[in-house]
Image (cartoon, rainbow over all chains, first blue to last red):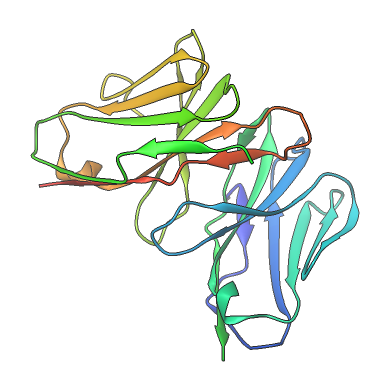
Length: 109
Length: 117
């Protein structure tokens, strides 16, 4: 069983729509959760972090965490073509990140 | 914000030679650095964790004698790929834990694309 599983892509959404990304993790002791965006050929850049159960909003992005279900999600509202990238879910345990395979999002203009 | 500078951004080398990749934290002290490898269409796989002044901890399946990691100072960590082979061709990325001064999580270097011919 993979440690971090993300919904398989690619995910294609029209410009202005909501993109919904899901992630489940197997390590129950994970305390910190990160969403990274990675453009092709580039290194990851931090989008959101979340540490407590519930929702966290930052601009067009909303992260949701449910530790009991070992589930974390990311919503991208008002999707823009510049949001087209691969999104990586990364729980952290003992200061080490475990990355999911990523979900590739394509925003259609 | 906190920046990790990684060099070179790309390198081509011949089989059997060694390649050194450097990561420097520019405006903070990185006591812990992480080295990742990413093959095309795959996610980042942690290779090793290095702590300043001590030996690196390698993940299972990563050859410590092939991937030499040195973290001699709080601002510099290096990864040397020794006796490189074509199967070592990959995207190598370093990452540092950010100090708890309002920053968040981890910051990544820009990555090094290694091609072994």
